[in-house]
Amino acid sequence: MPITSFQGIFSKVRRMGRRRLAVAAAEGDTILQAIAEAHQEGIIEPILIGNRAKIEKVASQEGVDISPFELVEVENPQHSCSEAVKLVREGKADMLMKGKVETSALLKAILDKDYGLRKGKLLSHVVVMEAKAYPKLLIITDGGMNISPDLPTKVELIKNASWVAHRLGIDTPKVALLAAVETVNPDMQETIDAAILAKMAQRGQLGNVVADGPVAFDLAVSFQAAQIKGVKSPIAGEADIFLMPDIATGNISVKALIYLGNVEVGGIVVGARVPIVLLSRVDTAKIKLNSIALGALSCQGEG
Image 1 (tube, rainbow, N blue to C red):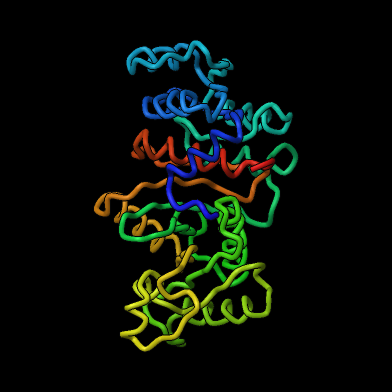
Image 2 (cartoon, one colour):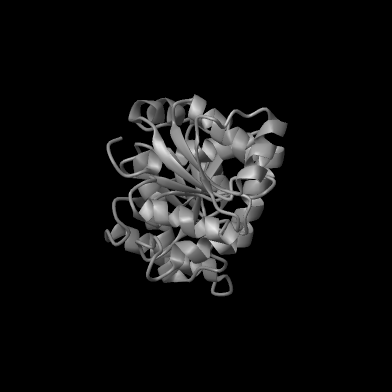
């Protein structure tokens, strides 16, 4: 059965056993709060990498007991990224998390051609969202990494998001190829891409998915909207994956729902050897915790 809530994600990852999480530059308040709670939930065994004095100071200020956790002393935040990647490559960690360090520094270590973690053709950001008004989890891509994806990039975005959907128990995810309208408009490149992707999906070129587009967001989440518009679509009101036209659309949509929509949310980067929990500095400890759970669910192995 597909997982339809974050409660379901937590329930499954507890049964899977603890995953070893390497945290680069772990000296952050909400970071340590989320890690401690994830450990308490039985999801992870953390490896904290960074400046020991700073980590211990923040932990003390936040009332977080880090004594059960492994701590690797690395003074320089950039070097902590390399150390975290090294632990993964050596099989000592199952997943990776960005701490109090620039995203560019972590990505540089991940993408290093000799010592990095690149696996697939593309790294992409996938957000999973639980909204009370929708009976499924929403899988949204890409609001965090790929700025203005062309057609080949969108193919890989769908494949990466589908991989996450499969980990959520969705055998044949339904993909909404989003645009502002449901008709192909030569002046709107996203509508042209969507029509091509829909045909590719029909011919099995995108894997085991059902995809349709161009479609507007309302049609993707509401069968009634599709009826009113007179649009027949196999994904109407039932979409699992929402392919955004560009990073701005994805980023704005996710943040609007987080701040105004009272949703549960978590996000990871996929396409590397292991899941990467890569979050904004302003994300709450709860979002970080949800993201750790999503990363644990997405680790290779039995699940």
